[in-house]
Image 1 (cartoon, rainbow, N blue to C red):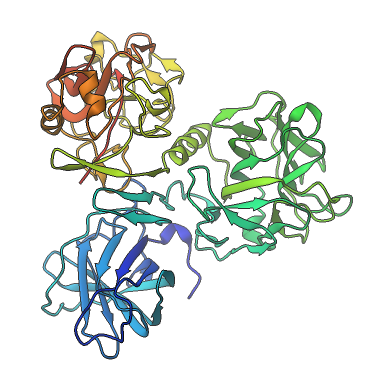
Image 2: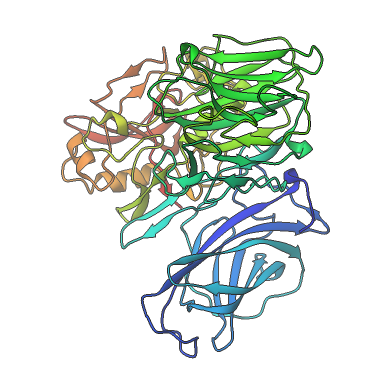
Length: 589
């Protein structure tokens, strides 16, 4: 495939669960319970150049494409056709027999049913219980019309880069990942979704030496790499793209050591004890600190940024950024002020490759010990606001199930929660508290800082909780915008792909099904709603956690917005100030 700039890509990852059923005239079948699956990535081409997909609607196909059609053909079987909406990134197709020599054709149809894009892959082998990776399918602009076909029911389950899907009569579990998030300047991206491929499409795939796949921070299998001994690392190669003079590195890690007794290299470019050590990020035995450094090309000096008493045996997010704005280290979204340099620093490089988990010529025992996941390399200094958004965004990419209630399909937990609630006051199930209409920018953290400066736009550009006042109708925005949070494609929709905020009518339909009209009924419902409290608009304090439940809807009511309330003796849908922080529970479109 020809090399193309990542910023000009439109990428949709599709997972087709292939359930073997009897389909007269099909291939030989000996086990009616055999199953297989196909995965692929679509790259949409337009008149010789590639279409850009806005981050605000990352799961969309190019403008004008409303339907994705999958056609599967093979010797001795009838053509199988399945349609689903272009906004979907995940779908299922039934009746694909186990066998070899199949051809998959993907078509993009406009609203009139015309085929405007098409791509295909041949020689597919569907094996019982296995996943066949069809690779990248280029969707070329074709024009023309589609033939008349009989289609199956449209698919509604949606995800980006699905890594695990389990379907039963009541739930579907999917890991939501959006590889287009924060793509400006992204030169390499390693989500470690079963391999060390570079998902920025710049071709810097990693060569895995000894390291093995393991569970990620959300418990999804084969979605991170574990390193446990010397000469276990991932070699990213020596491409110039991986050697930015100005840049940023973002990594999630789990240090599987109780104490730090020696240096542990997380990522590096260069070598120990000679040559040019361009950059590295390392655990240090002194003060249990974590530090990153670059060799400044102007001064010839090594410039450090460090954090003391780094957390061990739990997942930690670090971002190291260098360039004209200084050299900085962020840990879990916060700038480290232990050791950092506001002086400019521009990296210089030799001929070494970049390695994850080790440094060239480092002594045995100085390799990484633990897990590494979601590595991003940028050729620019990403801002503190972007870093916080990246941290919060990743925390929302967790395994969760959907649950049916009141005729709707819902997420089984609050947005930002680590688990399904075990009681009405289960603090680990509280999740975050959003101001009505705001996106995931960090303000939703229960302990985020506050500011009294109102925002003049839909995106404030910071992660502070904005205090409301009478001058703004107690909104965080200086002039109210009633169009926020309106549906899956709505501005600032904080829900995962294919999900949105419920309306007040949908909350009311849910409430009337409870066994009792109070917090006990809310928790006893299939949704297991919790009393997570709320955040006050006047001072940002978290109030009544473990006592009251407050869930925003997408519905506006004058200058207020509607929400579901419940306590020890009552429950109802009400409307109040938009600057309050309340829980979110997403509903499937």
